[in-house]
Image (tube, rainbow, N blue to C red; front, side, top):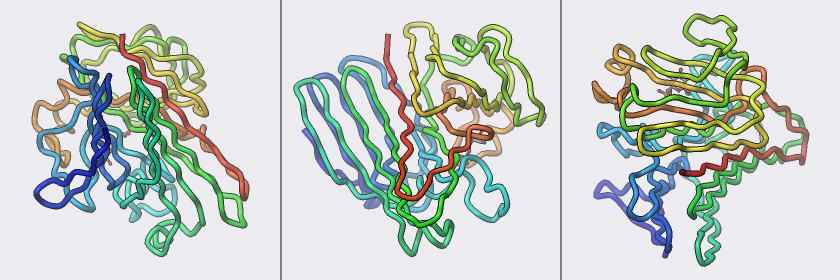
Length: 280
Ligand code: BG6
């Protein structure tokens, strides 16, 4: 079952309910902010301080960072992580199967998007909601010139407590440490006991987030980079739409094309970034 819902302030979202799971996707940003299999804990973390308000990205769920990840390289007056997460998308298609629902959202270049980025494009986002979750973001260059993008499916995973988790699959991977602006190599699993803001590179195997009661496997395609981020105490206190203890129950593991993994898309060509997320 699929329905269009509105919060009291008019903020619109699509609700999906099928035989295995429920999900909620805001039209602003095609922003998935809830996914849970029936009888199980939600997969995604969402801040209790998030406004769900037009023009402001939801703090939590899966913001889409596009067509650039992080700050714009040459103009820091442009929005961090691009504009796709704060504009309205079109809900274009649904496919329902017995145990999965696929919903598709579309964002096309317009006068609005051209104030931030001069190119013509079509961005198609397909979300498959079943016993696993698949997120697939396809960029089509409908311009006459090539363009380059960086991007991320900026997934906030809900965790029991930051002291309980470790992340497998990044051993020996080089990473860019955004806090020290240095290149490092990961040794062993990741555990978090301080602020972490890293872009792992050359990542081609699945990553596993191990928590107390569950493990989450993230298998990416069309991506060689993964961002791992937790703001920890001080940054959390300064950030918009975060609560003082938010850092304890969230960890971002972002399926990305970031930094060295920038992609150049030729006219009329496409690039697809896909994340398959399995719960165990
Ligand atoms: C992460 C970045 O992807 O997003 C962090 O690595 C950043 O540096 C975080 O702080 C949140 O960004 P924003 O724009 O949603 O506050």
